[in-house]
Image (cartoon, rainbow over all chains, first blue to last red; front, side, top):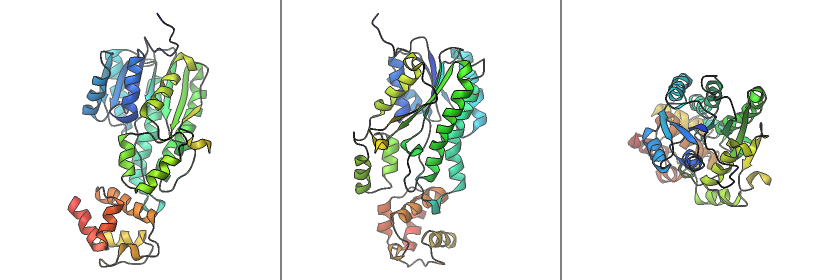
Length: 254
Length: 71
């Protein structure tokens, strides 16, 4: 057997937001690395498509609306009873919110916070339950954004939700270290996904060009982020916790 | 319509607007105001519009009709 320190054989992870974009790319990569997966999303059709892309790997799907915290625990407990305990999870579910300050809406901001941020905390709360966590090599990976670090106009609600994840990462990394659970966060720049297409629809070509120029290495691919997630889930990063890993083509290096 | 006019007046930073007013004629008009109108359409009317849609509408009344037609 060849040396592969990033192999994830005999480990089981839950992936939120697995129906598309970064979640789909991450699921496909982790399955290739030997992990068993539980895919979570509100979009059942998208989940089935992702599962299809994972080939013969042990992949199962569950649906829940993460904006409603009370839905989370029952579906995960049910999944663990069927398929076994988890070694960790990746919280990729999230959505953008482009709105200048003067049109910010409380209800929408609360929805964004619940999905992008609070559900991360709720997932962690459920995962650390002794009936859910496998008890060894625990790893949690959150996904924030360059906008957790730097500002941009018309982005206050989204930036709030992502910057908050940095605090969540550091706080939980301390709280969960004694359980041998590492907690890290990946902060991506703009990658070519459907979400970017949807957001870019609000802007003109000049803005798109500006966005591209903000990344010294150009816009990223979903696999660039998935690779970082795989590293943080694997034993290669076993001495890394509480870190925010920028995967942004140099966006925040400037 | 009246509620929409009040919302547009707030985004365009004036006391009131009329359906015949040109959207881009206000002092507060800029790209951020355009984004604010897009967010308003999404949040309040569950309609997705683009910056070009706003420019195509030209006047506030036609923008209102456009949003209504997409509901």
